[in-house]
Image 1 (cartoon, rainbow, N blue to C red):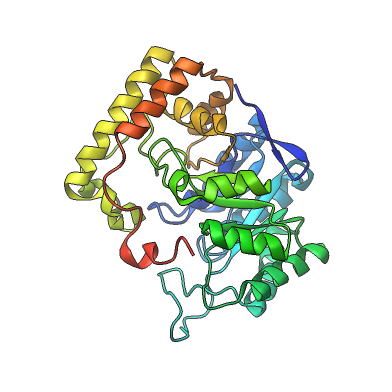
Image 2 (image 1 turned 90 degrees about the vertical axis):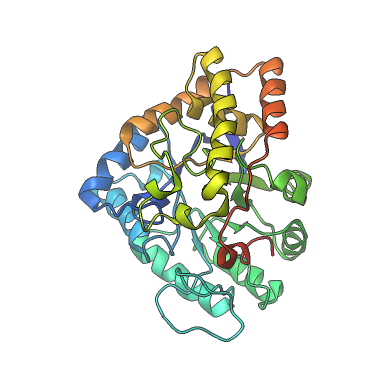
Length: 338
């Protein structure tokens, strides 16, 4: 049973809420009217550790949160994290920069200082935590981390972080300025960072590990609605992920079935045991959803008590049945682990 986890000298309620899916990457594009009930449910539950990014909907995701915060006057009740690092608002591409449909990856000081202003405007206030969404190897860490630290000292964010970085980059960055958080993928369905050294580095340095996709990009739910790779919406990024395609799709579904059996014996849902397991590792899970009832289900994970025997059983399932296929399409895979 895990209700809170430490972050920056305080305790934050877990699980948090990843807002990306409201209008980015998963085939949905909610208006404010559609998003408001989801955000209101999160607030009412006490699920107040929220995560967004400039690249999500090209700023529109931040706007959804900002509009909600203003309308309900709840800024003091929320912890809001956002991210920069993708060139979102200009189509130009500098030769040698990584590129994605979201834009080129850059960590230049100019980008960081420009994008924080847009984030503050869209949210209506400074974010509590500001990450570099991806690491740009062509920008010296002294420049990028120095710029983030400058934002912190100027009161434009309270905390700074890195997303999907390498352990080596985290160590170097932390030597330049205190890094408060790392955000990276982690779930019973994807434990890559147990072998990259990133989790160990976070523990050693006292950096909070914020786990995105703790439900395995939607796989670790009882009513996973997709029966084949062709069922994903055309603009759903999972269509491009190798481990969700072809025979990999069906092999990975078998892993989910094994975890589902444990959840059934436990008397909880698959999502609840998956989130509780991540929290039991001392990580802050930030599952996303577009449905208020899912928020209630996810929130119920905090009351799940995993015994030592159950943790061992789940660990055996995780270790014995690693997902088949890499996490991203090639152009996205190139952007992680720097």
